[in-house]
Amino acid sequence: MKTLTWDVDDVLNDLMRDWLRLWWLPQHPQCKLAYDEIRENPPERILCVPRETYLESLDAFRREHGPSLMPNAALLAWFQSHGHRFRHMALTTVPLHFADVSAAWVMKHFGNWIRSFNVVPSPRADAPHVQYDRSKAEFLDWLGTPDMMIDDNPKTIAEVGRSCIGTLLWPQPWNDSRLTPAQALEALARMD
Image 1: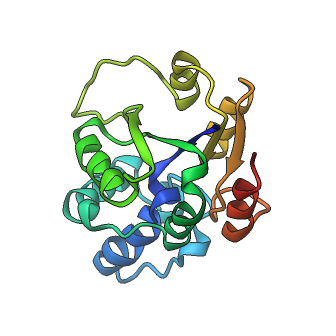
Image 2: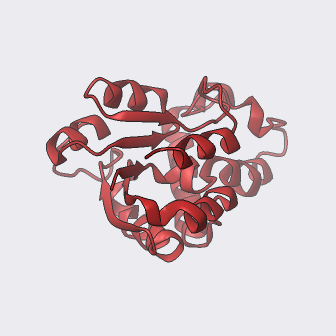
């Protein structure tokens, strides 16, 4: 049975879309940025703010809305139809002080299939932590080779791909995936 490794934010959920719609735009009515215009992640350059400002806003959104984020409906339907054919694990880069919220969210929505939650902490200046791995690729090298990594970050996909792990770049405006979400799910369903 193949093992699929899933990124959480912007794959299993729509964190960036929800943050923009529910948090950033209401607090910055002068900003007319549409979600499809976010061509970089993190988007601080597009927003014309320092990275710290963006991260503080994202963290405040996580604190208030993280537990209530809705799962990606198409992915949830895919898991219901095909999830039993694979083993699944989550691997995310969330600030360590939100890892419990992220883990609870994954287990609430995908716990019927995802049985392992792992985090490579996203650094925050005010929250130092012990660093075991600098990237998801380093974590997966330590863990052993799963069969596939599904992530929206092109850098992660490139790093993981160098270690003979299959990769699927989840389509988002900030990456160059040539697949639609439906096509990406079809490709995963065809895996033996």
